[in-house]
Image 1 (tube, one colour):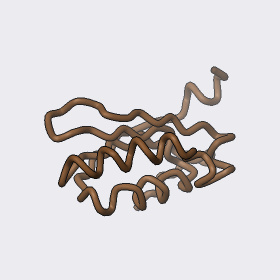
Image 2: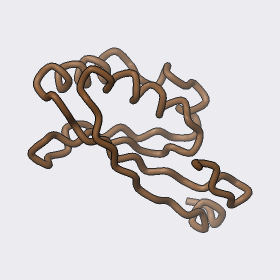
Image 3: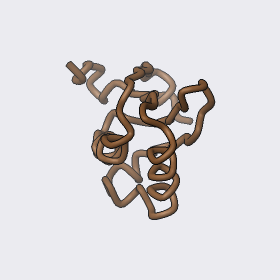
Length: 100
């Protein structure tokens, strides 16, 4: 880890989403440059999927979400009506929060 990356601030955000919108939301988050990790949390509180998104992976956007990951997300969506998504974001290089 470089000194620059150690100085960047990260924060977590949790949203509850219906299973029908789950895959679309995950694809949307994969395309955002500030998102570093996405966790799908089942209704009982267990982490079902933990998807790390590195800078190189983000450059590829939705390509990051390979077929096996989409299959797992689809299976979760089939068994749960609502899930939580935990999103870990990082400040941009200028140190400004652009999420608002």
